[in-house]
Length: 155
Image (cartoon, rainbow, N blue to C red):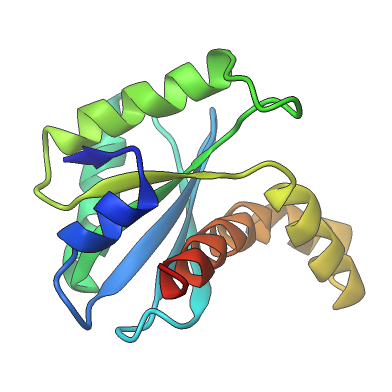
């Protein structure tokens, strides 16, 4: 089930369960997870995308199952003016395909500037350029998920 509104997503979730945040890209999928109280998002890992959706989905669903994730927050890469371009279309198509494979509710969260925020945090932590390249996607997923968690607390 895909929920366009965060309030509908929150209503569809069972209580006291963890969520996953995804930063979906052409080459990778950054994954972050929350605690069961849905207070804190923690960057987890970056999945290197293959040529086929099914292989990517299998890796992702294995993580979701192992961590007992009840819902998915997918970063939506809007343009700076708020409009949706080709990257949003790809992300929405990924969500539709994923929704066919899982009962977990899926929602979108505006990810504008999440990668920039993640990059700044890593630079402030004195992370080397090489190390940043390997972790930026799942750190960005953490920012995406944390934004959604913060919003859900105020519903």
